Length: 152
Image (cartoon, rainbow, N blue to C red; front, side):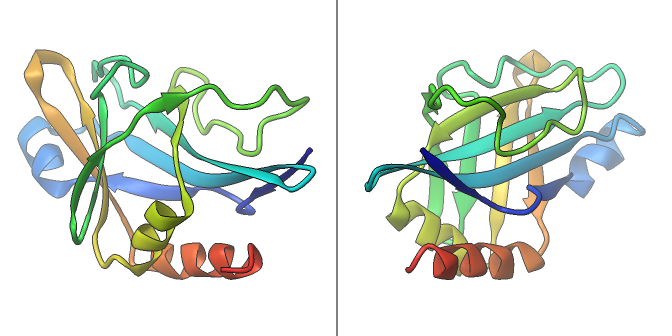
């Protein structure tokens, strides 16, 4: 099996409204598309890593409805998948105490991500809050290059 991934995952920054409201509890999120090619049988996944700041309590990101991807054309609740068993993961977590999961991804959603001006991951946190993380505009170019390298 061959694996297609970015050189490094895309870093998303915690939304300024959350930082302003809750102070120094800054957290980071990361995402990266993965293509698994098993002799021409292509499958895709979205690797997500959440690295919470001090005292930040997030729900389990593997729980149903815990992570939402918001693009220009609306929000998509992400669904957890089990990735193929490999000798090493395509991306390394940024924080040993963070949470990592893989979510369903297909080419149409990946194309939507690459064409969207807005790319945001929303995570459920303690107390019913939602914490948003936003990708920089450079993330679009990274995803476009990834798609081109895959022949799309």
